[in-house]
Image (cartoon, rainbow, N blue to C red):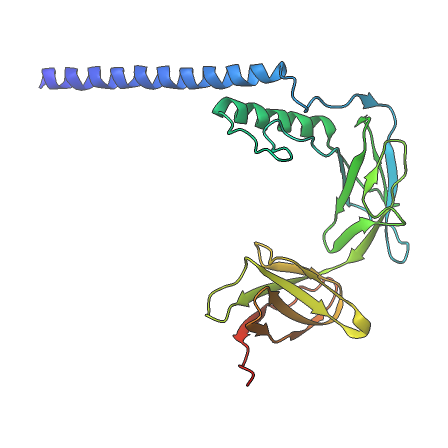
Length: 258
């Protein structure tokens, strides 16, 4: 009995030593790779800082300010050293290169992404920016926010003003059923059409099945690249601040034309 217990204790001690050695070795390898990233001369070296800021307003279509909207500015990432170039595929990255690339991307985002929340007058101001062209986006519950004025590319440099327009939207839960009875998502989009040519659409069904549509009366349907199926539209009354009832869109096979 004592010999058996002694063997078990010895085995546990050996396993513990092996696990500690493995964990220490793995941690040491990751530390070495991340340390090497600090001396990496990749294209991720962030641009220098500037004292200039980006300011603007978030207003609705009636010119009323929208408070509490999150506004984000970021500098698009440069091409990775692992990215393919014209006429040549990128070499297969090693584990070390992949880790260094991911760490460099994270460092780039930390150095170039800036955020602010709009105040009572819809105002925002972004400080401590990189001296480079930024992209701007904004979010607020119940609204789709996009650029106002003539700047439709959402590109702005520090020192410039950039106003945004908030348009109310309504959540529309959608399920798409294919002609064979299976659920459709890949290669399937959603359209909504209203009076006087108004409407919009998405190229893909969102992963959560939620489509955001403007308030109004819409004929909602699904589309796909196949020509042998069709989807009858479903009439939806979208009221702002009220989530729409769930809609099921069904594809059917087109009748043969003789």
